[in-house]
Image (tube, rainbow, N blue to C red; front, side, top):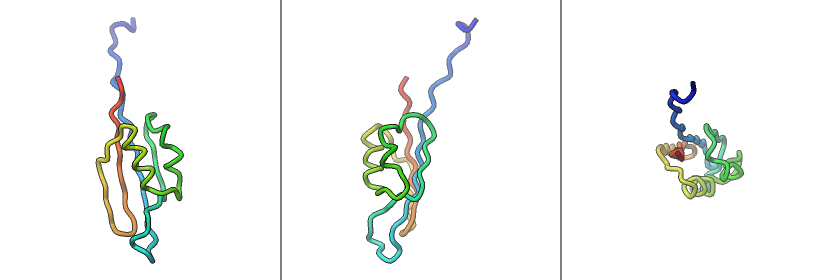
Length: 89
């Protein structure tokens, strides 16, 4: 009976990252204040997405593992980024 039911397509993985800079030094490196992963394709980067970790290595890891940066909002001392991956068939 299940042979006639089409399978659902895989959904993309979405990663949101909230980051901040030291307000006393606006040129300081960005650090992650919170990251959320919706999906299963970000396992390779989970250690880099921890609170307090540097944003740069986390972003580089996601991009190197097939994610695309779809949104980047930079408000100076804080900001938000959204990455997505295309699911493998």
